Image (tube, rainbow, N blue to C red; front, side, top):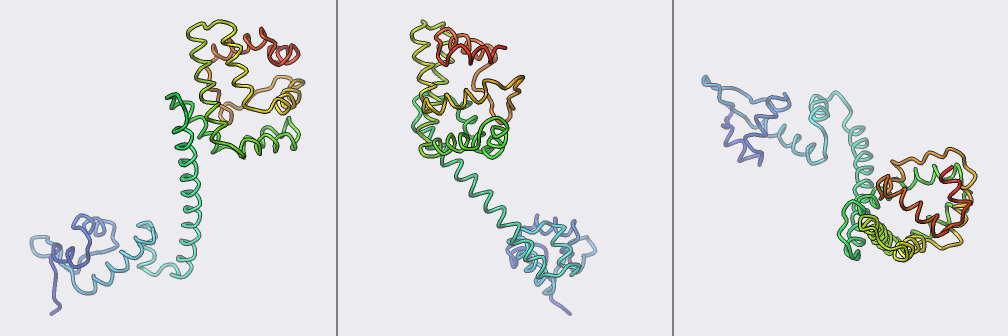
Length: 252
């Protein structure tokens, strides 16, 4: 007669938890060899081999349904291993991208002089949608200008976004506190000077003649409320920051 293990003994022998063994039984991938009259699960050495297979598949990140098919030999093992490797390589790229984004966000936030989580999250969102942003801009702006803009940003991404977050935050405070004109003008230039003026003018010129432009707010979320945006445009026009033609286009 084959030696039988109680669920507790089997759990200890295989390194699986009792809860996991019950779960695998319910899912039909590791059934006990027998049940006692009282309904207690009993396992044998053949179950150990199955448990080893399951532990291996689990380590390789196969789903329960995939494990079930593999254990029943419904799919070729080699094909499944190749597919799993390909899937994990894609997952690895995704995780590495997330880590890079987090590293960048941490670097920016450590240098920013204000505590403004919303603005930081908008910057992170911008990182994730860069390719889509470029596609949108290329509908209106020459590729050379778009590439110049993103190349400039990549050269010193942390510093540029530190300045951007601080400038936006200070403008929001200026709006809420009805700051004096000279202070507002200085803050507007602080924001605009983040980008080289010749490049800023090229972009403004490219959009000047675009009628009924609808900016994709998912790709380019504004750090300002609608009231703040309207106030900012009025202040920029008032101080003739980019010239009258630009603001006639914006308000037309």
